[in-house]
Image (tube, rainbow, N blue to C red):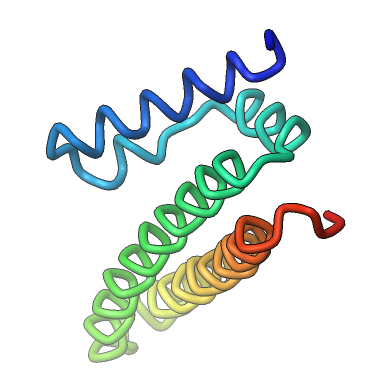
Amino acid sequence: MKLYVPFAVAFACMLTSAGAGADSNSSSQIAKSELRRMIRDAHTQEQYVVLAKYFRAQQQHFEQEAQAEKVEWIRRSANVSGPAAKYPRPVDSSKNRYEYFSAEANEMDLKASHYEALSANPNSLR
């Protein structure tokens, strides 16, 4: 049963922070090494649900970042003359950041969908 201890701890922490009214960012912060271990050890429905919730929270975070950067991109698009016309233009930087955050949100969506599918049918292959 020692194999389930890290997962149980991470799951309990996520439930505790979510139940205490914490924002989605604090409940979705897991160390990369812990995340890799959770992915490697996952084989029950509950573990897949935890991973799916984590990746959904990450998706929402990146979508919020993309929206904020889109607003900045639009603001910077209004001024593309003078010093703002020199390469690299601030408008290009905002566009690149927007595209990065959008791509990350799409990747998190794919991962969350994968683990949601596995949680629906835990006997399927990873």
